[in-house]
Length: 580
Image (cartoon, rainbow, N blue to C red; front, side, top):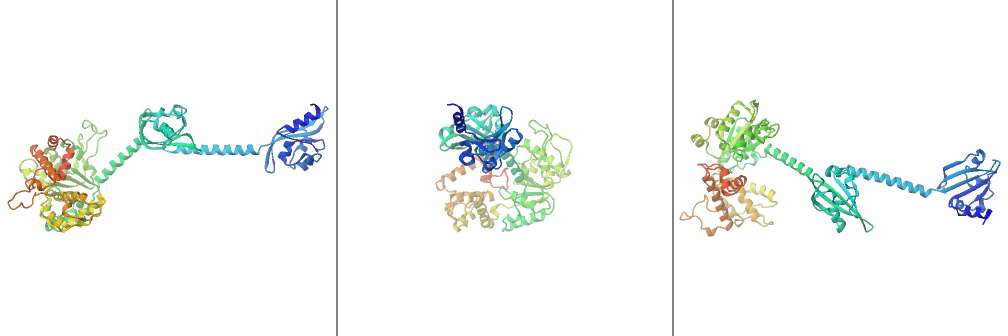
């Protein structure tokens, strides 16, 4: 095949559109691709002026200028083309026509726009992933790393070079790869603890499979840094304890006082609350001395200041001084760097409640006396005094007079503390308060246990009134709490059978003055009675040395204090307090 036939075949076969015009700008070539793109047939346009065929053509301009126009974008209605326009010259260099070769790029343009949008979305997603504080890890279906964010590097210490393209196990210091488990089981996992990275950071991970059209493509994991959460939780707990320690919760409205003895104590406390004088609360363990201390502070001009409580019996003697007065940097082995403020300084402008003040050793008593006299403290390991403005409320369940006589308590400190003594009567001397106390304690226990107990029946109340309550209000609260646990959830009235056996302690004996037969008590009550007797025996044998008593019982000192509180056992023996 030669000549015009071959040329026509080439023109008709090419994918690019070709339009050629003669020197008069009339269309001489219009191939099938041009027909398809322009939507007109060759028969219709051949011989016509090119502007009648393509209104915005520039072929006539090329004829007049003789200059080619290459890679030009041109819109033809809804179609966008890229065209090359060149002049056609004869052997003498004369322009005898012009040719435009062009192709439809509408689809290419749409694809380019889609690619641009995809890149924008990809950039947006990358920015979102990098902005989160949680680490994100993505692997493919074979478990090889595809993507990590900045938080991942911060938490694990691993970079993209360490992870991308590497097995999912590369970041695990302790535990199983959740990516591999998810890829195997095709099910998500939640809140799995493990350690990751060279620093063995504690984390919790959530991993889910990525499934597209039913095909597993990989998995994505979100890693939460538990170490940071734990640090924040500990800080929150520390602040919560500090706030609780430095805030008085109770007022005089919450003190039940129908009996004459209790009313007298409350009236005396209200009068003294208006002053800054030192107060000594006296009474058996469990009578409510701390409740009075809170109420006095809240009714005083210092109510907006801190309220700090310290149990002198619960702290070892070696630590009590540093807790009360603070210590300097390097004052002793293990001291916190920079030193620490003591409780007197923390209570500045408010009230310091010294519970069980009668158990202080004589050296510490001398230091406390100086603070009360001079209104200033000296930190352990320092010589410079620090002025403090603190109202002191002391409390004790022992006979300070007897302790003074025996040389266990300084007489001068006794007079400094005993400026305004307030005697809080034991529950056995104010039994007319028991019905109202029961109602008050039931409301409190309902809130704690999520119950709705409305009261006790007459038989149960008579039983409570017949008991002498050696553990006072604290024991009454314990008994009611145990009885509430014995009740069915829907029961609203506490009955005699719900109450634990109170035995015969403090109550009138039988006709012959005998205690109840062991068989009349439940096993639980017998166990508790035996435990209480064992605790008392250990305390008496050790001279009420809590460390020795706890050691002989095989329990911790904290557990010993808990049992003493539970059974209403005083922290120190008292001639005015019953043994039980």
